[in-house]
Amino acid sequence: MSLLRKTVHAVSWTLGGRQLQQLATLFITAVLAKLLTPEDFGLMGMVTVLSGMAMILSDTGFSAAVIQRNNLTQVHYSTLFWVNLGIGLTVSCLFFLAAPLIAAFYQRPELTLISQILSVSFTLSALSTIPQALMRRAMRFKRLTIIDTVVHLSTGTAVVVMALNGYGIWALVAQPLIQQTFKAVMMWWHCPWRPSLVLSVPALKDVFNFSANILGLHYLQYFMNNLDYLLVGRFLGAEALGYYTLAYKLMFVPIRNICQEIVKVLFPALSRLQDDPKALLDGIGKALRSTCYIVFPMLMGMFMVADIFIETIFGEQWAPTIEVLQVLCLVGLVQAVITVLSVVFRATGQPQRELRIHVARLVVMSVVLLSTIQLGLVPFTWSLLVVTLLFMVVYLRAVAVLLQAPLTPLFAALWPALGISSVMALCLWWLRDLLAKAAVGGAHELALLIVSGAGLYGAGLGLLWLYYRRYDQSLI
Image 1 (cartoon, helix red, strand yellow):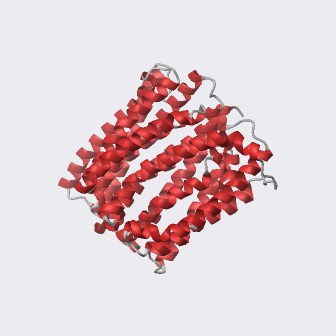
Image 2: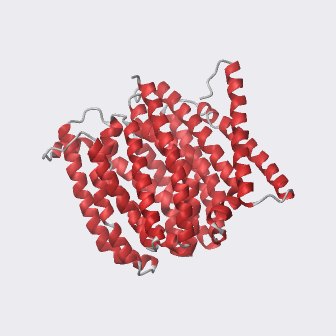
Image 3: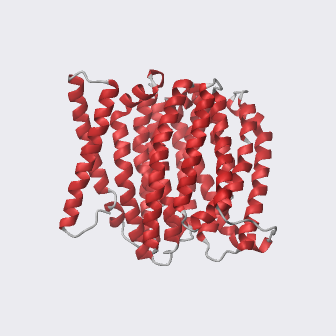
């Protein structure tokens, strides 16, 4: 099977699996939102910000090196596995000991026990890192999608059962532990590779520089993506963070389930084209166009129905989430583009370039967000949009320079989906006015808007396809 066919096959499976997981996530989140309070979500969000940083350290960037490097051997894989497992154990111990400090930072004593229990997840995660990377390197995305879907559904079911039985916030605490346990078992069951009892310092040195850059990059990415969580939790409290967490999850679902899955497939695929800038430009343009066709209508549709969606699915107690969700949908449009562009730096073996961009972005974001946090949740979210938009332009320029290409092909990849999605949004705004006059509301209004939006976007996409076909061009 050619690289193109492998990539298309992999993307089809990953997107299909993620759509199923997305529906399950929406259902599970809705059930938990009915059973738990915004403060429960906020408390868990406080710990998750810091546990996520520790989780990145337990990976150490080795998985990216396994995927990108072409000359690694069994000695390399085994060395990386044992070192990674040792780091995972160390991180678990350090996070357990740091639990009282986490509670003191947020001034919430109950976070001590929560943090200590969550510390186990870092060791569990380290068990599956290298097997998963090897399966991605081999582009076994069909198998990985099946594993992820089974783990996702099993974990969600267990968490909902716990919430129904009155476990409260402990259902949320158990979620990452159950997920990492299921994932480790499934990865070892389906991955034929087994580590040898070997530890080679030269093998570790072979991948250290690349892995160190990737690790630094992941830390900066994570800190930028979670600086808002940290500030909201620290300065606005657990309840405000609960509202922000729900809004962010609903916005982040399309990006996580589509963009990041496309990136997982693109990384090994584009890594094989790293010596051909023209092919790389063509590949990233198609990836951008495909991603925008899927993500843009979802986020703009959510923007238009946010108030009805929140009140109907989650209840009136979550009403403060509405305006935050709408602004974050706009952030999501921009972040989707950045997420796809970021793979170019890693695929060409130059993560240090993206690292420099991230350092600048983190400095600017820290200054802007710290200056707006006291204004409240909504102004704070608008400032996040401004910073994200600024650095999308920086990313587009950096990728164009790296590939020695003009900006035109990259911008051209964004306009078709943006144009059709904008027309869809305007039509939905007009339709909402008609439904309001007809006194149609609640679930009926939400269903009509979703179906109408899907139909309008599908019609627009069909017309665009006919236009491109007339000139013997591809929609993608």
